Image (cartoon, rainbow, N blue to C red; front, top):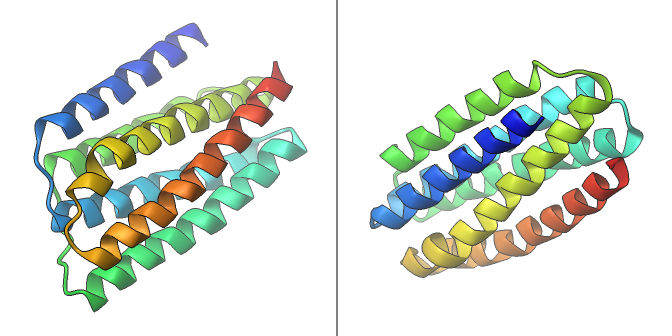
Length: 171
């Protein structure tokens, strides 16, 4: 578990470093948000199957639904505002991180899976919240995209609070 937590910290630190090194435009921001949502959806689907605690399963179901809705919304904004989603080093790193996260989660079972999944959720939602505040919202130019990001921030904060509560219950 310590090794898993250390790797999460490393990945989160690399993500923060990467996002702070590059100027982002709306094309990159939309792709980053699509990618972040897809990673959460994939992790949630795995947790729906493997979680043992009802609270973790319920949280996973909520993540799949809300992140699917959020991903659909960013795609809609991209289309309506004629913002082409462009892959970037940041979005590629997010995709790689999501794959690694799923791979790591598949290695644990039972109560340890629940703890690992919720630990991942706390770390990733905290990182996304920080990225929204420090890079994504400030660098967004399109007003509809900026509004979407601000609304998303509220949801991310709520997800983080819920994840922390469940994580505490599991200890």
